[in-house]
Amino acid sequence: MTIKPPPNIQIAVTQNNQKHWYIPHDQAIPRPDNDSHITQILVGIYTLDLVKINEIDQTVYIDFYLGLQWYDCRLDASLSNPNASPYQCKLEQVWHPNLHIINQRHLDKELDEIVHINPQGIVTYRQRFYGQLSTSLDLKRFPFDEQTIKVELISFSYSPEEIHFIEADELNGISNEISLINWSITEISTHSHGHYLQPEQQEYARFDYQIKVQRHSHFYAWRVLFPVALIVLMSDLVFWLEPTQVIPQITLATATMVSLITYQFILRQELPKMNYLTAEDKVIVGAMLLVFLALVESVTSINLVAGGYRDLALYLDDVLKWLVPVLFMGLAAFAFWV
Image (tube, one colour):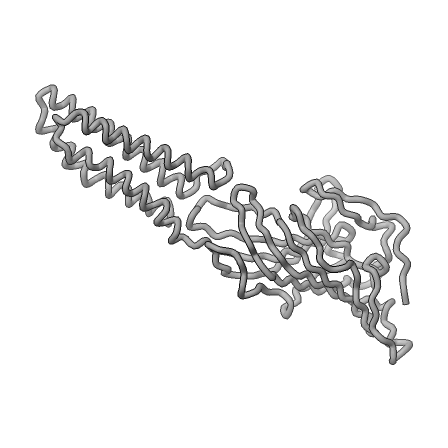
């Protein structure tokens, strides 16, 4: 049994300005059991590879396999012919849920758009996608952050009351050999729900495949915390100098401030411009304040010695030489672990 494709196919523009064909709800091939039950659709997504998470572009390069399966009673040949054989046809020749990946940037398909139909009317669609997906990253705890990568499937033709996506446990998963570095896979989950589109005032069926990843923080601890800690400790040497040594104190305090500002600009180039501070930013800003404190105290102690208050200048040096390192360690602990 074959079903002719619909005569009219229209174009939809997704959120990333890419065009995709879709069959309008009122022109589509009727849904199986259109007037009675919800059509159940098995969804399986298996990630073959995760290559890179790009924080600046907010994208991830992914290679995954998508499998869909549903029952269409109109294609159940076993009811009339027990000896019927499975066959395949083009996707547009049968009813399908009209799925789109709404967070895709540049995804390519490897397989032909065909479906396999067995004699019992089970329709199976398989496709392999590779390319870029957009992903919303929360970098507030960078570099000790966790992120969720999603493959967001939505039907532009049917609501949750008409079709329902069911996770195919045996198909969902991820390869043990992925190319993603600096990250660990912690969890894989799925979520079937409705997606309300305000311009159309319509809710559509949606299925999310989610991969939770955790950044390897050891590299950034040595690359960020250790150099910044050295700069702060270098500024702390100001308090160990004799208050009468004006030029060494001012030179050291100024050099550490310039070094820290330059280092901050270099690190910032690896992240997108955001309207909030990351944990790394908080540490660097706090370090700047401590370095600036060293500069202010240098000027203060010089003036105190010039005014005849040498003992008070030495007392300030003794307090701050231990207080600054303690404040820095407390600031780092608060920024990264609170």
